[in-house]
Image (cartoon, rainbow, N blue to C red; front, side, top):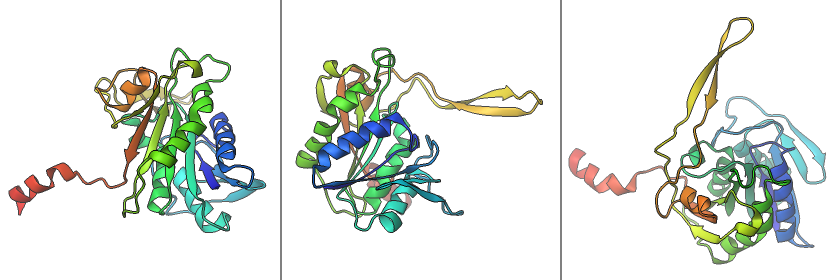
Length: 260
């Protein structure tokens, strides 16, 4: 198997090292693992592409490249410049922190997987939820490292895959627990944290100029039965099928009756 890996935490992020090991295990002795990842951290860029300016790309080693762009840029670079043949699978992550609930909308990790799906490829985004039970471990990615390969294999073998225009891709979040406390997998809808939103915090520089830091809120509020954050907080790996189609299909018929 030929696998492309990318992320949004940057080429030197520890989560990418974990993903490299997972991808090598999945690819097997005769397979290939290609890395095209951002040269610098790109957290929160979503599905951004560098449409108005070029990006520099550098080869750091065999099948290992860093691009000065977003995760979606990296996927484009890999498919249309770096790789002589397209990959069989694209894996994006492993993100440091959850990309569940509304975080998925901001996530460059999810954006990389989304771009791969738009390019017609099977794609999975993977993130490690952090919390009091795992943040201080020697390896905070312990749960993802232990269960990552089996989770990807499970989705590949038993998941739903299609060839629709907006094809399915998957968003996986590993729970904020040590590996030994993972309780299994839960297919989950994307949740919504009602108790927290992104905002800004103003600060003054020594020169008196005003700067705004974007800040998030608490991450450990459950998001309702059957949703990703709730599954993660209960010790389960959440698996969420996604599409890039933003249409609110549930209101189309009623809206036609009102407006047409």
